Length: 509
Image 1 (cartoon, rainbow, N blue to C red):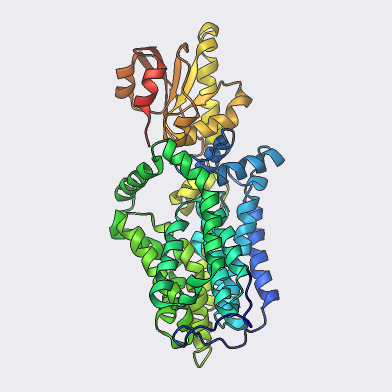
Image 2 (cartoon, rainbow, N blue to C red):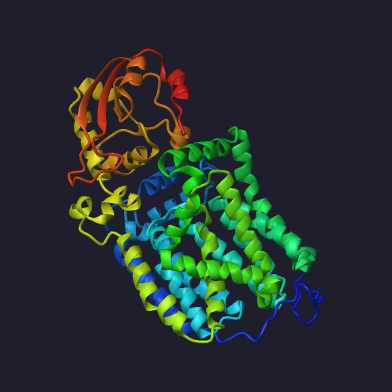
């Protein structure tokens, strides 16, 4: 099925990019940049604690299925595998995120090379990837956006390499990459469709005639079928999540109004100029005529998530190919002034400083008094052991006869994941939650007795139980203002209806 450039049909004149001989790969400096980033992530990956989503993925990994309400099965499976290798070890749990982020540095440099980038452009591309705040913050955590950025970058590199070489085996690898990406998050489907549409509109249309491309599409679809079947069997909860996310973004981030500003901030302010230069080059420069579809695909993806109230970081996977194209455009400028002063040392220092502030570099005891206190990805890694300890004290304070049939319910799936992780060490029974994916893990038994409800609205609890009183308050002891700080623990007794009837009504997204 593979066709090499010698026996492939040549592209039309309008689709043929100007492909000078590729420069040697700048392995040494690119490897150094990738190594420094990987080392920084590795050294900080064991600090503080789990992020809420990581706790959820660990809990979901104990309930393996073909799908979940908010994502396909890859992350829960990966979290379970890493936790099996080294139970409770944060460094090992986050090792896939660390390594894939380091690999992303290399891929970004390789994209620049395929676009005609010489040594300087490759180094600049690698450096942009390594100091971007969103890349560094994601790379620290085992969460779906981390894998998204890597897979989108990999797909971009495979495509631009195919444009240069016309080797159809690259398309088969692209199918495998797309299949894996779809097991992480369905968002990559928007990127893939945008790429196909852009190729159909501006070329190279020869790509659409290759059997290997459609074989790759078949691979991606077949691998995704089980998770889609799960979604269909459960009423397409992923579609419900889209509306919930849109509502959350409207409340927290201003919705569509701030989508583009936030996306640019996440890229890293000085790198925005590099990214814009890359988009302009892809769309306008004759030298990259055969790669123009990448620019139009980037615009289409951004427009889609803007119009559908997506989150700003949904477009983060587009950044590497735009940085690479921008780096290539700089090497064609007459002097190195732009390299040294526009996109050189000062820009990298600024971005690196911002990115470093996103990592847990301060002592945990000082987070509440530092800029990291406003960093959601940092503050939400603090206080989970204290939450479990607080619930444990309330549980063990119950009379022995109450403990026997008592159950624990949390208002969030993050808190349920925390008790799933830390609860057994405190002798706590299984925790339940009616929120998002945790709702599917099961409901408390109908013959249960007293309920320790972590969080929740007191008025709503009183509608369902005869007696509700607060017995504890969660305090992380570090004065870090996060979602658990000050959360009440309620003792609820005398349910008005059995759990089999309460549970469906409690379900929230």
